[in-house]
Length: 341
Image (cartoon, rainbow, N blue to C red; front, side, top):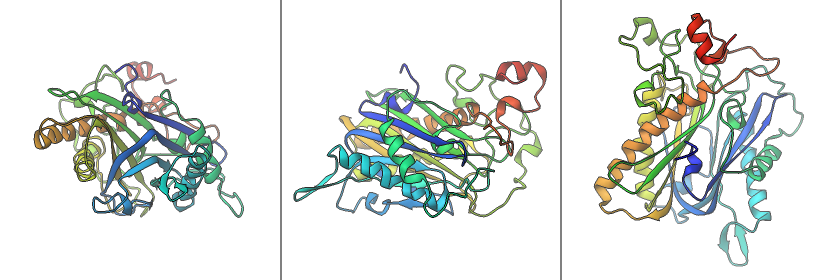
C-alpha cells in the first residue's frame, strides 16, 4: 500500500476544498463506478443528508459519492455542489431519461472556531462541494484541509486523517478516512502519545509507542461541554464484494476504531458516524469469517486514521483557539520529533 490512505482502494478518489477565511471546508469522496454503501451513527448529535437510503431495506443500493463538510447545518449544502459536478459528468441513478446522482453526506460543527462566518444570505458550502469534487484525486493532503480545516479536539487541533491495510488471511484491502472534530482527546494527557498507538504502522503518527501506565488525569472528562459542538466523521472502504447489510456490519465494527482512538467517544455531544463502502472487486470466500476479518481490520485502520488527522493538523493563519500537536508545550526532544518550535 504505497500511499497508506483510503485511495489505496482502487476506484476511489478524494478531493478537498478549504476556505481559510471562514476556517472551514469540504471533503468529497468520489467513486469511479457506483458502490454499495451503508452507515452507522453512534453520536447523539448527528447532521446528515441521504443517510436513510443507506438502510439495507431501501431500494437504491449504490452511491456515486460521499461528502464530509464543516459548517454544521449550513455545510449540508456541500452535497448539492458535489451533485452538480456529478450531474455535469453524466453520473447518477437512472430514472427514465434522467440521471440522479446519489450523494449522502454528513457535517461537523466548526462554527465557533474563530473563522468569519458572516457569509451573507447563502453559505459557501455548495461551491466548496463542487470544487472538492473537481479536485478529487488518489493523491490528497492530510491535516487541516477540507472538512478538517477548522476541526478541533478536546485539547488539540483536529484534521483529516487516512490510512489503509491489507487484511491478513484474505485478498482484501481496507482503507479509512476521518475528519476529526472530536469532543474527546486523541492523545493521552498532556503528552504526545496517542490512544491509537498500539495500532500504529511505520511511525505514521510519530512512532512514540504506548505509555507504560496511563495517568489518572488522562481519563478526566473534558471540561468543554458545549452540546452538539463536536463530531468525528469517518469513511471505511474495501475492495470486497459486500451487500448493503454487510456494509452496515462493517460500519458497526469500524466504530470500535473511534473508541480506540478518542477518549471519550460516541457521547451525546458528538455526531459521530461511519460510512462503509464496498467496490465489489474481490468476492468473499466465507461470508461470516471474512466479514469478521474485514471489521477487525477496519477498526484498526480507522483508529490510525484518527491519530494521523490530529498528528498532521496545523495551525491556521490568524486562529489560535486550539493548538496543533506540533506546538504543544512538549519536552525539547518531543518538540524536535514533532517539528515544533
